[in-house]
Amino acid sequence: MHQRLTSAARWSARWLGLGAATGVLAGMASAIFLAGLGIVTRTFDAEPNLIYVLPLAGALIGWVYSHFAGPAVLGSHLIMQALNDPRVTVPARITPLVLFGTLITHLFGGSAGREGTAVQMAGGLATALHRTLRLPADDMRGLLMAGVSGGFGGVFGTPLAGAMFGLEVASGGALRLRGVLACLVSAFIGDLTTRSLGITHATYERQPSVPFDLVTLIRAALAAVAFGLCAALFIYVVGQVKRLALRIPSMPARLVLGALAVIALTLAVGSRAYLGLGLPLIVSSLRGEDVPEFAFLFKLLATALTVGSGFIGGEVTPLFAIGSTLGSRTAAILGMDIGLGARLGFIGVFAGASNAPITCVLMGLELFGPAGLPYMLLVCALSALISGRSSIYGTWPAAVR
Picture (cartoon, one colour):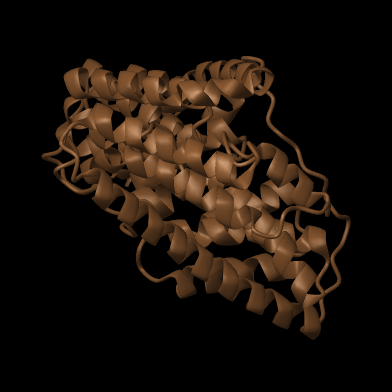
């Protein structure tokens, strides 16, 4: 009995240590990335005409990835493949490549996110740690899950959601104790490391209470249907753009055409509000301010054209902008509190697009507080159900190059 307890203690300490090490690496990578992202975002805001240089930026990204990326061109999908197939390896070069590609994308106004970058950087560092320590092959999956959690928790400042993201999305439903320990520790250490390096995350106003009543519950359910359908539409449009783009053999050419399409959309709608992360749209929606009626659709199209054509970055922050603007408009139609509708849309569309409702509920709690928790639970579960089994983390077509 004593030997079993000793062995269990050593095993737990080992995975706690590996999770902590992965979290430190993920947190440092997130801090470097967020600092750089802040610089390029401010630069674009000051010089919005940089959008017209996006085609040249796309050609550069395409050339670099075509010549140096190899399997790393698959991005987050490579991380997901490695989690499900031990024969798939993640090259260490994915970390600098995705950092470079994402910063260039945002410097010139591409509509992309940041979670994909953080996850890929952390995944690359986790595999490098695995090789450096010469750990058993069976440990690779646990370290990758920890890297995913640490990257997500560090880049958004939401460690609980980060830990669950690694377990809910990266595990594919196959939970193991080593994964639980490593993801929890990595997410919290990743967040602490990022904050200790001077990074501050966006904070949102928290309502002290949200009344619970049947009418609002029905309205939230109706809104959830809209969120789920929007998530399904996003996945479909991104998929169609990818399929069209892959008909073009040259990756630089694909990105140039994608950039021209983004510019054309921007000129057509007469606004640059749908470029970049979309944070101003999120803030306006959550404050209950008026947003354009079709803001969610314009942001959806801008993001689909950007990431679908091959620009580097994630989809989650744009999904927050899509969801919060759709939630704002849907709430106005249903007679619901505008701020509540925006918060539910913020997490609801992401829940439908990721098929990770628990992660999204935890993110709602961490960002907005516990007020309205029953509505969060209903919206995230129903949106994920409505959107179907497709996910933004599905398999990327093999012929991506």
